[in-house]
Amino acid sequence: MCARCDDFARTVQMLGFLVLYAEQPGSDLVFADMVGGALAASLPDVFPPGYDPADGPEYPGEGWTP
Image (spheres, rainbow, N blue to C red):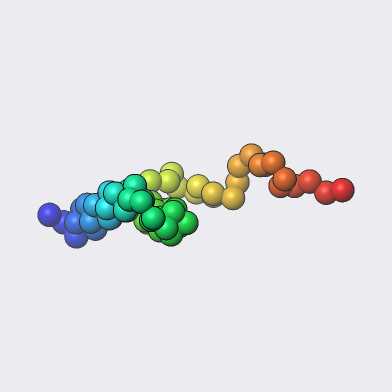
């Protein structure tokens, strides 16, 4: 397996283990959410070229000024 393919497979496997961890009673869901997001963002070719995660719709409470 090529190095890039191996990295991809390892990252997907870690995401799977993280899901199993998050389903356990007493798991730290904040940790699982943070690590899961970082792992998903590290996957190659998940986002299209030029994708900016900050560019998108405003969410409730954002962009409002009194």
